[in-house]
Amino acid sequence: MEALFFEWVRSYGYIILFIWCVLEGETALLTAGIFAHTGDMNLSLAIIIGALGGMSGDHLYFHIGRTNKSYIYKKLHKQRRKFAIAHMLLMKRGRFIVFLQRFLYGLRVVLPLSVGLTGFSRVEYILINGASSFLWATIFCTIGWWFGEEALIFVAFIKAHWYIAIPILGLFLGSAFLFFQNIEKHILLSRSKK
Image (cartoon, rainbow, N blue to C red; front, side, top):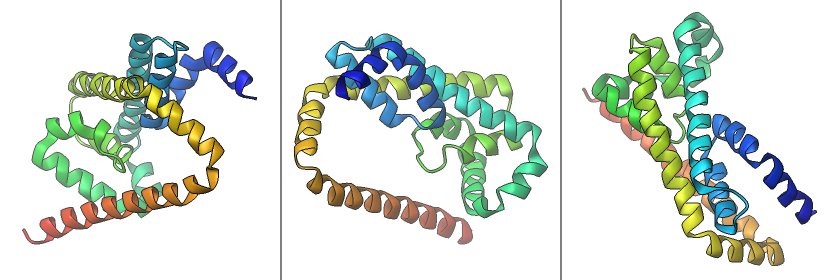
């Protein structure tokens, strides 16, 4: 099974990386960096393809925001809180937030939609988001490449001791969820005090 997986990576790895970065990204880039470390992918090409995938996803959401305002308001009414945070951040620091959106986990879909809902220039968005996407892809691919050997040792350990990984993963995901919930509450509280 492992041999088949690596054969797929060698044959379709860049296509998978592009699609995965359109949808999410960090895990895909770290994985691509690890594969670059083992020689199964080219690091520079992985960075370029990952950045283009991230940009494509962001521009898709931007375009949806720009052309389907009423649909977004109707279908995404449960995300009102995130839209309020995104709008507030854009009002305070527009271009800076557009640059950081690739790094703001939890707002990655809402921010491009919100930018699309505003009158933000499409050309300016493409340029700022492009620079951000390439920086994002470079950072995460390089981390995967740099720590590739350690990651492979960790994966081998997890395969042998899978029962340890489940509680650690649960703890990590729970902590990340609480962290981002706390940030949202902090932003909303600071807005309500004004």
